Image 1 (cartoon, one colour):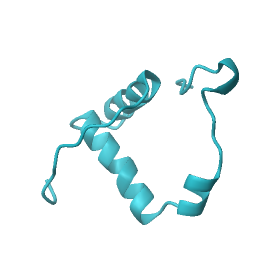
Image 2 (cartoon, rainbow, N blue to C red):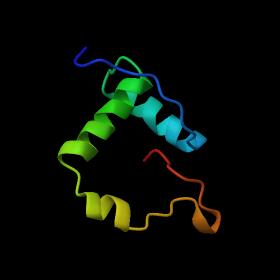
Image 3 (cartoon, one colour):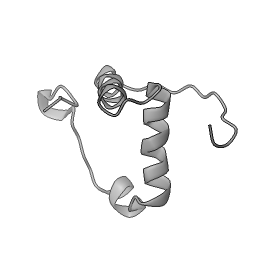
Length: 70
């Protein structure tokens, strides 16, 4: 357990919770919290912030259901 962790609360859609649960299961992570930390670490270190925050990725527009498992 690297680094001190703090508990935060934020709202996300149900499909994103399902996505985090799938990642937790697939990669044998300890919790969905760990899956979220992995994603945030990627954004912090390897993610292209301009691409992440300036590219529109509407997965719920036009009747779309959001994230779906392939």
